[in-house]
Length: 152
Image 1 (cartoon, helix red, strand yellow):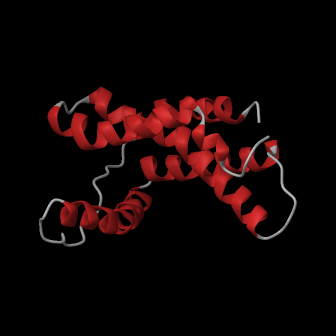
Image 2: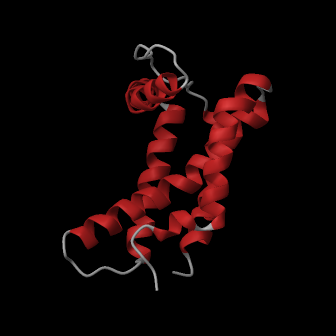
C-alpha cells in the first residue's frame, strides 16, 4: 500500500537529500570544484519532481479526493522541475529570481539553526547561484526520480 508522498522515502530520494545537505554544507565549503557544484544539481533533479508529486498527492488526499500514484502527475512534476532548472541555469533574470526565492525559503531555516547554536538570528541573504549552462549536463538525473517512484 502506498501513501501520499511516500516516493520521497525511497532510498534514491533519501540518498539525494543527504547528498544535497552534505554537499551544500560541507563539500562546497571545504572542497569546492566542479564535482561539488554538480552534486547539488543532481540531487535537486531527483528530489524536485518527487517533492512536487508528493505535494500533489497530499493535496488530493487532504481534499478528500481519491488519489493513487499517477504517471501523469509525475511527468508534470518532472517537466516543471526540469523547466525551472533550465531557466535558472540559462537565463540570468531567472537565476536572480532563484537567488531571491531560495534565500527567502532558507532564511527561517538558517535562523533556527543559528538560534539552536546560540548565535544571533541572521539577516536575510540571497542564495548563491550563477547562470551556468554547463550545469545542464545534470538533467538526466531526473531519471533517478522516475526510478524512485516507478514501482508505486
